[in-house]
Image 1 (cartoon, helix red, strand yellow):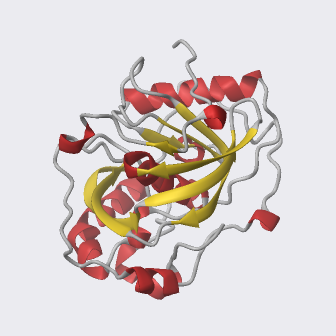
Image 2 (cartoon, helix red, strand yellow):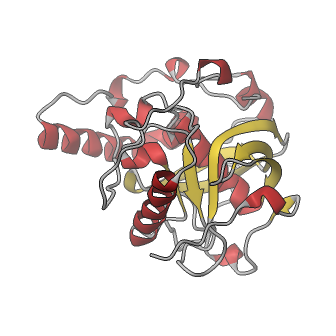
Length: 268
């Protein structure tokens, strides 16, 4: 696959969705060819979300990835819930070499093949701070965005509810409320630092993938009412994991207590 990496060091202040995005929201994840729901059903207020305890890894706690941490074998495969890799700590990248570029190429390749528009490194079994996305979701179209060691400077106060899916949760879609826009710091594929504002679809995809880098999964942000609607699907994935690995599932949705996975939108 030819390398075409969009480096947003020189990007415009706000990356906006493509002109035809409104009828086919392609959330994160995986492409969902249905109109995203803007309903207020089961919404959490912005104040309620912000008051929740923030879970994740602070900048000071980040460990630097070694060459072994960045080792991979092609083709990459999507890691599905409840694999513990999705909850593991993701290390900071300090090596901007040919291996990293090859990893990025492979991530885009598997993302496109699985009809995704965004993908984080832990979703392919590599626990490092790296994400890729293309809001158009087609190779050779749109812009391929690579973010290394991303950090959030600021979230907007305005919250928006959309229907999300995730490549690590096949065929599961549900409403998730997130800030409408976000200001971030990151490094590009060559290691250059930059700051950029994201809004609309790019902001939505970024936040979903950024959560993955914090060990947060999209159902952690759902209301209990919404979560109840997919509980059976999550249990099916847990059973699939046990059948495949012959190991007990590291997570069980029926015993989950929301207070233990509360997440908020604070500075990172």
